[in-house]
Amino acid sequence: MEKNHIIELLPEYLDSTLSEIQKKAVAEHLAECSICSQQYQELQELLKAIKDEATTAPSDALRSNFFGAIELEKQQSQGIHTLQPTLTERKSSWANTLLKVAASIALLVGSFIMGKKQQEQVSNKEIAQLSDESLSLKQTAMISLMGNESASKRIQGVNFIDEFNEPDEAIVNALVARMLNDENTNVRRTAVEVLSEYTASETVKSGFISALKTEKDPGIQINIIQVLGKIQEKKAVSAMQFLLKQKDTQPYVKEELEAIIPTII
Image 1: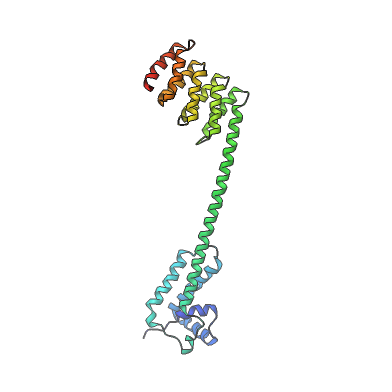
Image 2: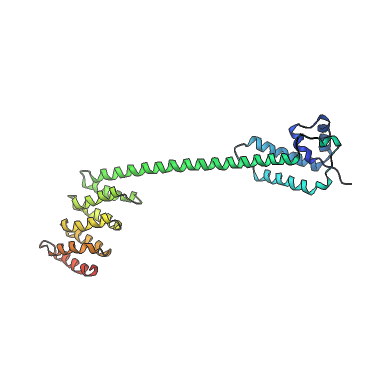
């Protein structure tokens, strides 16, 4: 005959809610039945995990054991009998205990996920703040260098544009100002080279067109003409024609203009 089991009494046994007679009967049964003893040990591990690891999700092993115990209970439901009639008078049923344990696990997992999400939000906010502060410092450093008395420092400031993924309007305006007004030819040439990477900006295109009317260095003039020709900037035609008519415009610059203008018109 199949041996009786007392699995459904284990939660009350662990909670010490059974009578003294029931406790003794369960203890004696556990000493003799390996199946119930194993379930008792696994349930102890599960409850201990919930108590000791209140801030983390249960391990896969404990979760597997927990649901394994449920499955075993279902499979053996036909062979489960009470030790004696008085054992059926319990404070709560095994089903209620399972609901309590499942609710505890759900609460732990939910707390873990919410805590992790909150930490990520705080971390992202701090990173964004540090990034903004870093960009602000870089912008201050760049504009400060471009206003330095030393031409080499101003060139260094112009090249500092590499530190920005997307320079804002203040930086673009500062670079255009260097291109149009700096007294040093090398600084202006460097500014043209840097700004040629940002021709999508209307400020940059307008700056190049204005430079055609003010720039006196032939090398820089040709650089600007080639940039405007490459982007097919029709608004530059008038400024190019103006430069073409100037008596002091070098012959090779005029040749460049005569070659570029027809491609834009």
